[in-house]
Length: 602
Image 1: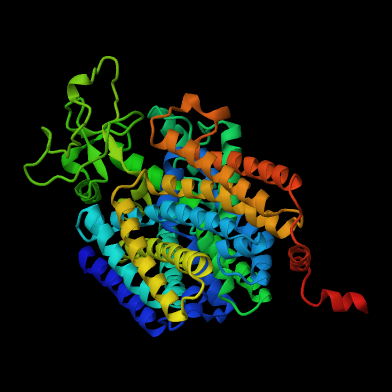
Image 2: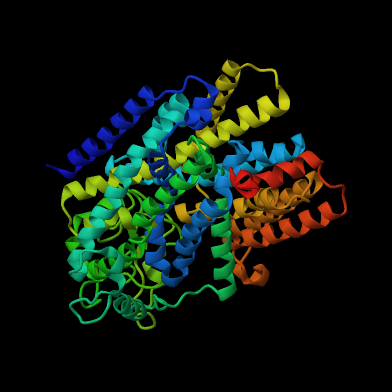
């Protein structure tokens, strides 16, 4: 069966399944729309949490990121996995016991302030829109390659699917859809990982792949180091980031994870506090299945890519002899070749082949002498001097294609390639749906119901939630079509914002009886504004790395924002009145397990 037909069957079949679940589990009340009625079994919630958490960044972009930047990519692995442990142990049970199912709801009630609630709403919306942009971009990438449409059309198709089951089903529909999506995405990631590991190393487990010995007698890591140096790159095991930048980025990703609104709300869909802990344990196991395989998949993909493009002797491969996968991704606009030295060979090395990105091209359009697809602003062959630069980079590779292209590069069966496509869509759509629900809940429940008009009925609140979800989907689609960077980069910014704004407010709300309204408001404002300003300047306004504060990149500045948040919040709270006694009693009770008082009495 052809790849196209298998892809249509796998992706189309998964869509039918998701939509059928949404219809079966459609929400009939605000409680079902917001928290699935609070009756989801822990193991199902663990799967849904894992799917919600493992976004397009985890499935599509993380392995690609590590493939290209090597050691520096470990910050994402450590930050994202460590952050989930932090969330499960430090925050989730206490938030579940507090009983408020959104971050703004917790902030508003704990800090007894509608202003604090409104600021938390703003933080939630900014974080969620930044995050969802990466998901919609991921959907567009998958559809552009496998459904043979441009990325913009792919984003619009993704918007339509998310609209259907998120707006109709709410959290109830999303939860059970995410259970199905987890099953799809974990199979889609691990099955090709097993194939690749067995093919390259002879060992089936990708978790041990990087240390496995190849036919050359070297390990995968040693081979990557050698290949990287031969082609002018830095050693794979030696990163470019400074130690302080790595540390701050890891902390930002970790604390940002623990402050993500769409993951926190998942712990309110189970019946009891005990179930929140149990579902967190299940989710950690389900997440580990994918994350422990990521480094191996990244390494295998990098070796395959270099050896396929450059050939066994690193002399390059004739363009006419390039395998079909290379042409497929060229046509999708996510890979490009510019024959800079005019020898007709495709050569991949350090340096830029393009100032911009590749561009989809068709017969007779924008092609070079040997038929390559040229970017509109490709570096011209005239600028190449063979005497000074005997081996120049001629290939643009979008980092986000590595996981998707891996099975094709390794010539795995068509059904495996189609499965990966379905898994990538599942990963992106599951997180996009969770984020869109968080946005709609923040607007309808926390802004409309709790702040602007407390007298609206349950039916009106549900209507506002669905309208907000529709608007949010449209905005998310815009950011998917006009993304500020590749998927993992965009998502990292969202984690930095969560780290600086939401996480400290939640931690201090749980563990500090002294933290009051004034401290919380000033801390959130300082954390959010300072981090947004830094990110905007360096990511969008032309700031250069040599201007970084202490060498800290935009993704890692969330840690600085978090430190400023804690300092300002404690300073302001110490100079202003204590919280009311009833609030202090709530905080005191929050950290005592149920039944502990009775046991102590005996």
